[in-house]
Image: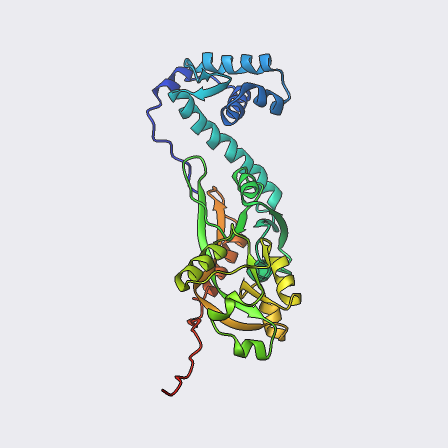
Length: 330
């Protein structure tokens, strides 16, 4: 990982030349700046509000600049305050990375790889991604599941090494994520095997058959809704499910049709419990690996990402087509 570069004119720092910066004061400032509120920050730090105000005041006196202005009950950073926050972010994030590095075993012979997975993500995809390191004696896996927002916060303070998500995230100055697409899966309609699958016509039969759909907040659902609009059909699902593990169970046991990524129901398709009715045109699920910029790279993590890119395959070029009907003689 490269050093974070701060391209600012930092002449005011020269006022602190040859003096020791009080990192205790700087840490308190960092917490207050992130909270934007003195009372909440004091509660988080388990100190009184007056004691916290005193610490901030001492830091401002040492730097020779005001760091906050008041806006009602909230605090706003001054121009210099924003600059000091940039430095504080770099300092304390590096400290978190150092602790995470020693705990992960990167400085030892074995490595601890901490993976965060979005709670609704396909378990099959997770297993496929992690397969290269499963059973590796030199790698100890720690897998956590939560919302993407919760996982990003853990990644920011280096409590995670990687997040697996089906939603991309953007980076900015305060959240320097590295987000890369590592896979793309086709989405299909699956259902009970046998005669119903052979007789299925897309899109005509969608409106009359019981249909199970991913939840309205998923990218798959958005793409599917657009596809339905293009064909001029309306569907009324009997259930909408955010969690892919539950979607898989209901697809297997409900007896109806389900819109799902192939990776979610790969075992059921292979065993014959479910059959692919059609692959949906222009509907795919994308998977992303999200990491944070760091000074030391984890060998096991790099190996996983390289393997994922090597295994990435374009979605099958199978299109859902309407079933042709014979013309009646005139």
